[in-house]
Every structure is written in structure tokens, then in C-alpha cells.
Image (cartoon, rainbow, N blue to C red):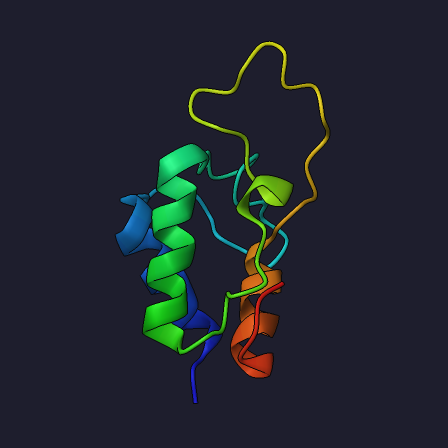
Length: 94
């Protein structure tokens, strides 16, 4: 069974962030600065590492393009580390 600490270690290694505190409430894009291609790579690697189905995951629903466009004013849904933890339990991220 995967622990929260395993998920935090995975996130730290994937985004090379070893200074910030990572909690369940941290927003992947706003708090950790993961967006665009980096977000795509993170979620794909997350899916492969934790055997989570992402077939229905809509990247643009949660992440801005890289770099965010001045004209891209559509508000994104919030994705937290806690959401990833739940996805591990459910084996699906939507």
C-alpha cells in the first residue's frame, strides 16, 4: 500500500522541489508551480508509477498551457496533492 510519504517523495523527485512543505492541501499548479508540459509529464508519470487510470483526465481542465496565454482567462479547476492521494486509492483520476 502506498503511503502519503511515498506520494510526497514522488512529487519532490518529479518536480525537483525539496524546499517547500508538501501537504494534502497544496495545489499542484498554484502552490508548486507545475503547469503546461511539466504538468502533463507529472500526471503521466504519476499514472504509471501508482497504476492510476487517467484515460478520462482532462489536462486543460486543471492546468494552463505553458506559458499561460494572456487571453486564457478560463478559470481552471483546482488539483491538490490530496486529490492525487485519493486517485491512488480509487485507481482513477478524472
